[in-house]
Length: 297
Image 1 (cartoon, rainbow, N blue to C red):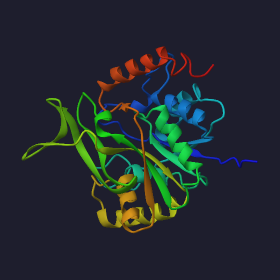
Image 2 (cartoon, one colour):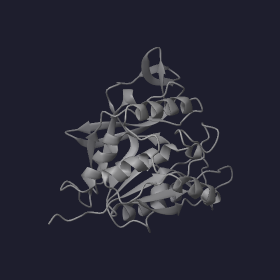
Image 3 (cartoon, helix red, strand yellow):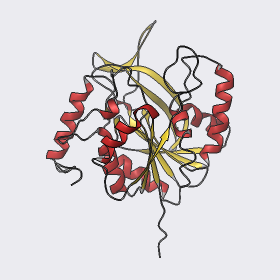
Image 4 (cartoon, rainbow, N blue to C red):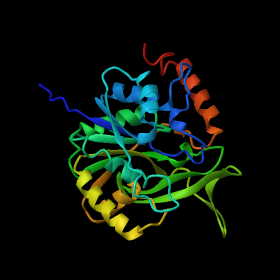
């Protein structure tokens, strides 16, 4: 008899939405008030995830929970972790970054788990591939996974985005560079710098913060976070990011990361103008039969 493997998915929803201008996590994009998160949850339930842990800020927990449960799929149990925003240096109002968000879930997860952002649409293939890895023989406590997107499938027509530009060899992640300000300019994809526009390969792989981890991650992540806080002191702009933490674990030989490629196209809520793109794409997929008109009855 085949053993059933339980998996969880972490959805990071504690961001401030500074470029968006508000709580994009709670901005409805579906025909019945569904949030972008609900389409990720729908895909996660279909893929076989059995548990979801939301990382949120305590001050909007009541509103968040109320909005989320309206369209929660059956079969997914939910828990909520608070990303601590106390003990912040003067001038800083937001939490310490995505690595800190994942660390906030450490007491709630003891099974293989995925990590995604609340304000990104990843695609069904990506979510299914993530869960398939977590229940496959390739998974072990020191073998992680990252869903790799082609850069050309992840840019916004409305402004710059931040992506983890990856170096991949034989299907394994060797290096990742967090790169901000990636934009489309005159039909080219790249970044503006003081010495001009630096073009990037549109076929290169990038990270969209969709990862597969073992609970073994938390021990190492905790140590890296303590080292990070000691080194940055009270720097109000410092960020403890998942890609940087993963790169350190690779460099130190603690973990390896399998890159699972996807043909899915990303869209998300980075800039206010992106909302129209998101609602149009959701409507298109509903008409194509990818999602029902109502996600839940």
